[in-house]
Image 1: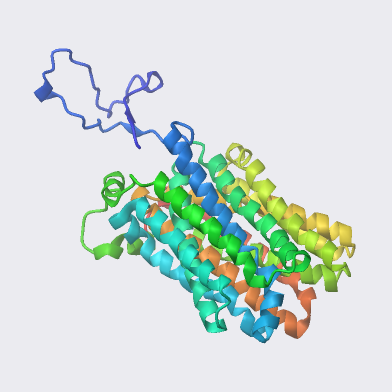
Image 2 (image 1 turned 30 degrees about the vertical axis):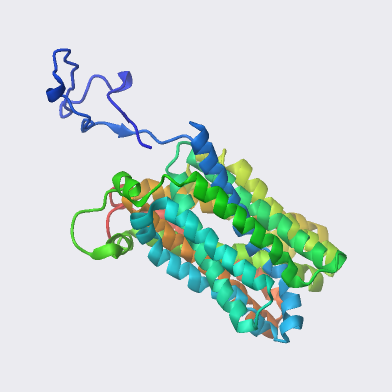
Length: 448
């Protein structure tokens, strides 16, 4: 949905090297065409420019809600998986790692699906992966099948993340709209542990009964998003995002995206970011119970506070970051998170720790949308899906790998190691993001 506009009054007079276009009333139909002049610019679509666009945007919000509801439920159901399958924590933690396989496959295939089937293909394939996985999990299959189903969950979430971060990231006011997209992820992540725990403890449901609800939510996502994006075919996507000329096959754009410095900086940064976010969400209850000596309910509320902080931060700071500048705002938010982590670690009071971790979530919440905005502005448009799909897969990979690693270390050294590990990860992520400032401006989006 791109439109073109010619010289505006503010751009007159033209520079000496800029061609001047004049309106000629005598021009015959044969002398005119619809090819935009060289100086024409694309006007980014607005989220509320039509009912159809609003329909599409809200469909992506529901997809984000489903992803958040799934991702945050792990912490609530893992203790019950241990009992049900009679496996130790290390084996059960494979449900953290297995989605990484799906994320990786989605990073490889996402651009291909866009090129061949368009966004319509994403809206069919991604929710279908979720529907199948959640339905099978709700039937409490043997543990190896459960692990395979979580791979399928990762595949669907990876397709969703690559597609909708790019699509929204190219809109007008993209930071605000992306903040809402990730905010709905946070809403799902905030309420799902409460719902799952309440159903299991209060209503007496089995752990797998929660996935009846997840299956229904995924079916809604399938119908909602497919109907909204039905006209977004592969041919339409190719018209809007023409490929670079040359050889290389269907994965040429993915390989080309990986030659850009920006792609790798964002990918490694998001790998750490995803690890920090999920590690806090996955281990805060254990830390608050064992180290801060809170009761199970209070400790669970501390986790809810963290996810609520992320959610509120995404809704609120999406309006603040563009006024500061995306790159600078991300650096500021990381510094604030480091300061709050120090308070969390060094002040041994339950209330102080609970408030500090909630504010850590608040300032970290909008970092992912900010990285997407930076990437979309520094990379060619037709590489957005490939590059951001790759970076998003890295983020989810960090969310799979680091909680598992911290669990292994915590078993050997105790859960008090959580805070120094998180501080180190935050410091390293700040150093990686600083590389974005050190790149000469004319080389930022050049190949490595």
